[in-house]
Length: 283
Image (cartoon, rainbow, N blue to C red; front, side):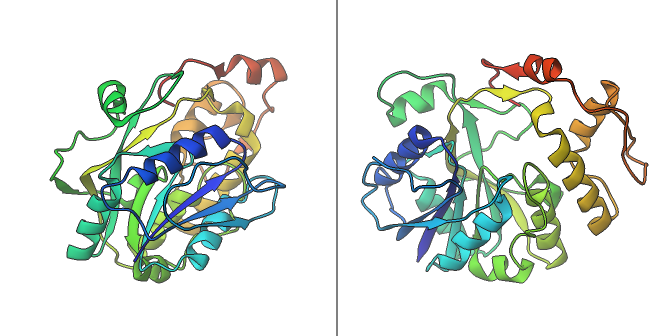
């Protein structure tokens, strides 16, 4: 049995496209779990042609780890597929994830291709034509399975794993709140539990465009907090790319050998506004 799990706060239009993608699967999942982190369940959604269950997960900043744990706990499947609300699954995503999970249990990371802004109806052929691979991720053949060298590569946009692997890792650490860190921590938990991880071709998802902050100054406090928590857990830093950008901007004193982050100043409102990028494809 296969359960697809997703989280949402806002982004109702993106969620609608995700569900439309579920309806178009060559092999449909047995259910979809929507963990919503907002006052009311999203309304006006299309029918994905499979049962849908909605779970309210309160909290602010966004309780991403708690929401994923709630979805996994409520799911009935022995195979779990996690899709970010921004992702539209290609027609073969569920079939491909299900096939590799049935053959060799592991954590599988599907390919994500990024879309420009789109107006009007969406169809799979169009997505295939305009979706662009992330330059930092591997290009995979449809039938390819490639071992991941480090569990730090866990990519929360699209991944699948057996429930036994989720349970072996103990789910996600709910101490992480707000933006960043919980996925990397979960990868470390999977590695500690001895769960193998691999990239898998043929399980493509298409990331719907939205504006981003580069660097993510609007999440400054959460990133520092969660990075510090990760280092206390695992003895190394995560989100070091962003920490390096914050240090280069004179906001913090930090290096990858530092034991702590020294905050020099918080970003000014004008700096946060200037980091907003409407048309960036990748972040």
